Image 1 (tube, rainbow, N blue to C red):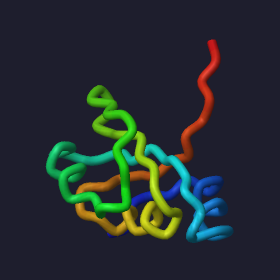
Image 2: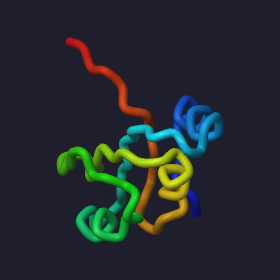
Image 3: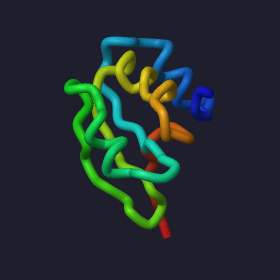
Image 4: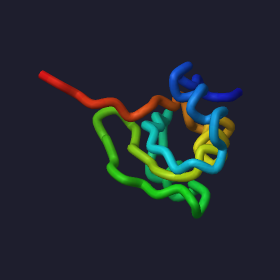
Length: 83
């Protein structure tokens, strides 16, 4: 089953498959095993252990492929956080 992909991110992924983008990937279960299995062109920018996720950077086509990886539950764009 494919992971849920945020509509905003899906639009960015489809618009330029070669463009390097950042995304938040959330996992179910073994986060470390999922991160170890990421394709070589995907760089882990930061790990968020409290939400079983990570910020990743790579070509849009490779990011889109993460939705089909076992254990990946969702992909979201990186957004600025303000308080």
